[in-house]
Length: 113
Length: 113
DNA sequence: CGGTATCCCCGTGGATACTG
DNA sequence: CAGTATCCACGGGGATACCG
Image 1: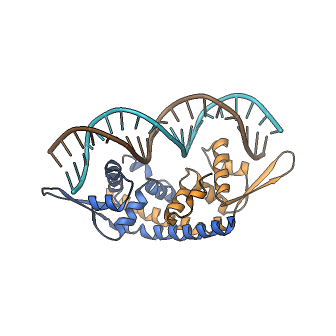
Image 2 (image 1 turned 120 degrees about the vertical axis):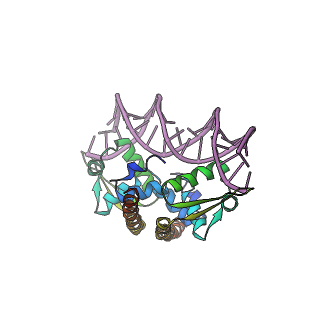
């Protein structure tokens, strides 16, 4: 959150790695890819995450400029999250990761036979 | 190292994330991409890493089946590391990470102006 | 509903010293 | 040269409880 500045001048790959290094960052991305979601929706979509963790991870991604957080001044409160433009550009990376992951899993299975 | 098994049946993206989650895994990949390297060479190429860390990260990647470790029975010892086939297939992911990282860095710079 | 505020565990990463 | 063997600090991650 305060190391946004320390990212500058660093290797692009290292920068990218930092962003996705959070345990839940990628899962959040995946769920936000299909469209805008409310806090409660995300929590239901991501089993095992606590409120505190979801909040902090969302704040972190927001700090990186990857997601939008929109608060509707209503009672009860309503907050919506969505990917920013640069956030959307991360999707190809996710696809790439997914492709390799699939290849790797089938490779491992064939190895241990 | 012993969670190779726990990877099976998991989401491909999660699997991929685990592999690159080590602090030095990606750097090692980068340096091995350009060809086979000896232990000492890697250590020189990766400033800031200790012998102990380099050893354990290499062992981890070897355990995942991503790199080859070849020991030459000589005195003094000589050990060479290289990417395996499935290891080489990871390169596109690295490229993808790099592309996005570059986009992100220039985006941030234009933002904070 | 969508958060803070605390407290704490434990695993990753690292410093250092020794060895075949 | 290429490792082990110890020991330890730190912070990410999580459980729980309370709030506007």
